[in-house]
Structure formats: structure tokens, C-alpha cells
Length: 357
Ligand SMILES: Cc1ncc(COP(=O)(O)O)c(C=O)c1O
Image (cartoon, rainbow, N blue to C red; front, side, top):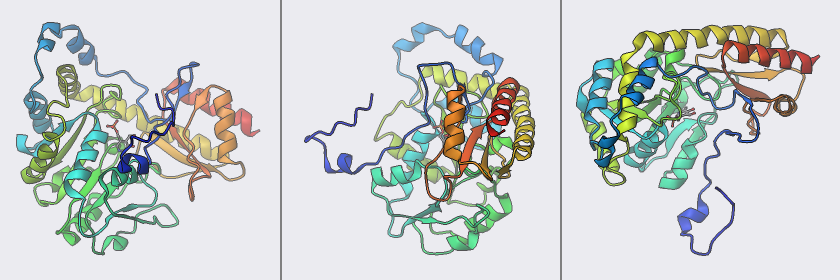
């Protein structure tokens, strides 16, 4: 529970923190939840089998601190060596360790002015200087803006909350231009139609790719994330992890993660369905007078050309539908709408049509 109460016992850093506020997880009513980019589909069928077959006696023991079985499954799936894979308790934790490991440098960390709102929070926690680089008027990244002295670069690809992706060739150029600092590509949403930077790992010692099981693997409640990079970068993450919590991935999480990775067909089918629904929702919103940014993620970012986003957000909420509204400069006209099941998309579009008429 967060109470907002202050204490005289807080250290200076705790007093100065500006913590991340996650999207609402309501307890009071059954909402159609399109506000935190969760998957509308259940985890792969093998996950339920792994849970049912799990030997609870094994929980007497600590898990493998190196999560070998899970790391090996990821390495095999992504064509990497075991030493090039790191796993953690959600990609938020993996990102936090990466900020800690790589970004306390002489020059500021760079990231877009509109991107994942956890990045500035980690900067506050780890006292990392940072500079935000404005996206252009189409909400796109101008890579020329990143050619300046920096202590690291982090980009979500696709970007959040815009959903706009960049291609691998642009990332390769960025990496070639930035050999002296670490570049993190946060691929939380990459499986919904964008190009992964993983094939660039062999070429660039300064590339770290971060992914999650929360979105395209339908496992947000599990808290499992991973990072891919050349062995020395991964070793840096392991040094931080082993100075913080030696066992971040518990035995159940590991077994479930492996089961999810085994079912490639189910994974692709869920992603395909979400991409098809995204097209349908985007087209319908345009018909209703929205500008919809081109999304390669499991959400759309849309602005109604006449109506206030905050008003639409509140009206949808009263109708039992949660979407995300950011009351922030440049994006306060937009709503971020996660792609739900077919039925949820129908309900959303019907509610939108009704309240906009
Ligand atoms: C861009 C981005 N990165 C990372 C995350 C964190 O995902 P998780 O901690 O669930 O793996 C999110 C979550 O919404 C995100 O939007």
C-alpha cells in the first residue's frame, strides 16, 4: 500500500525519488482492461501442464542462481550462447540492473522525450544524469540527434506509448556511431511486427537487447524478463544481480517460462491475432475521427481530432472500460489503448461510437 506519508527516517535519496506509477489494476469492478498492454489471451497450454506437474517439494530448495535451464532455453530459441543471456524478475528489474551497471557515466544518458516513463525513475534511483531528445513532430526518432557525447542510449522499439518502430538498419547505424557507450534496445513489444536487434549482437559489443514475457508470451503476472548481449555485458548484469538478489527467478517462474518458450506455434498465433485486431481497431478509430499513430505494438496511440482525451478516458471508465491517459506535455491529447480480445475490441468500439455521437 502506498500512503504518501513522509517519514523523518527517510534517507536523502528516498526523499528525492519520484517513483513510477503503473497503470491501474482495479479491484472494485470488472473492467475491460485496455490500460496496461497485457495480453487478452491465456498463456500457452503447456504452462498449465507445467504448473500441474510441478513438484511442490522442490520449493524447499533455493532455485538455481544462474537459472541455467531457462537461460539455455532462451539461448537455443534466439540462436545465442548461454553466456549471452540474462534473466530477471520482469524486464523492469532487468532494465534497472542495466541502468545501474552501464549508465553512471561522465556524459548524460540519452532517451526520447516521449518513451517509457520508468527510465527517468531509474535515473533518479541510481543518480544517472540524463537528457531527453525530442521526437519529431510525427513522433519519430531523428537518429542525428543522438550523435553527441553520451553515457549511453536507451530506446524502446517499438516506442512506448507511441507504438512506432524503427528498423534494424537504423539501429545498426546508431550502434556504429556510438562505440564508446552502451545502447539498450527495449523490445517489450517487438513481437507485434517490429524488427528485433538481436541479430546485431554478434557485431556490436555495446548492444543490450531487453525483452519480456509479459506481453507476447501472455505472462505479465509471472514477472519474467531477459536481456541479450555479448558475454562481457551480460557479466556486468550478473555482477549487479549478485550484489542485489542471487535468486531473482524462482523455480515456478523458470518452469513456466520454459513451457511458454516451447510452444512457438501458439506464440505466433497470439501475436498474429493481436496484429489483426490492431488493424481493425485502428481503422475503426479513424472512422470515428481519431488520428491513429502507426503501431507495431499491442496497443494503439490515438488522438481524437475534436474531443478531449481526458473526457473520453473518463467516459469510457464510467462505461467499465479502462484505457491509459497520460496528462503530460505533447501527449495529453492521446489515449493509449491496449488491443484486447475480439469481444473486448467490439465493446470498446461500440462504446466509443456511442459517446462520440
Ligand atoms: C517499454 C517497456 N519496457 C518494459 C516494460 C516492463 O515490462 P515487464 O516488467 O512486465 O517485463 C514495459 C511495461 O509495460 C514497457 O512498456
